[in-house]
Length: 127
Length: 137
Image (tube, rainbow over all chains, first blue to last red; front, side, top):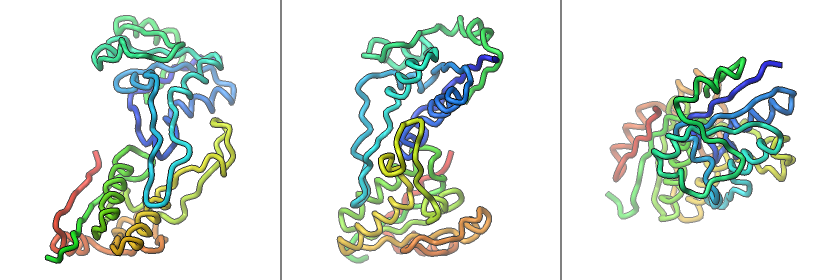
């Protein structure tokens, strides 16, 4: 089976309406269909690793959101399913979150090592 | 100019694509909670924000049925701010760009919204205290 790496670059794109990150959701769904897919977070998407994010409280008039996005939980579940989760080390550092409380289960990878990582996959999809 | 403030918003982005739609509706919600009248000119992809044919769905990845998932449909947000304005004695005048809805096949109208033209946007701007364009990128 061809291994796939999903690279997530755009973060928080429609997450309040979708209740998730659509590419993390797609990765779950495709793994459920039998695909072997891992995830690399880069750019602003590395912020998904920060613990304690709370997107609750959205309301319009009398309408209130009851199921806010919990992207960190979705990523943790992906790791529990056996997916590998990578994040670009320099992107964490540039945003000042390398030392923040981050979720478990990810591997930081330097930009110089990205080519080697990508060579380990038959298909690489950048979103 | 009357005492009651009137604000006009021009929206361009389709729903479910980024945070701009949500941010725009939060600003509109904040305005109607203050009793302001709000005009909205939904242009290009933004005409889908108030499309009444949006439907919630269950989510197997989240492990929730349709009721528990309570999937947000922006048409409900639009309806909520229109209702909130009515409760506070204000009005939301939401205009869907007619050519834009024809191009996209989004021709059904949510109650409280109406079909219009760019001329409505100009009229809105002339009659408002201020106009905020939230463009696409």
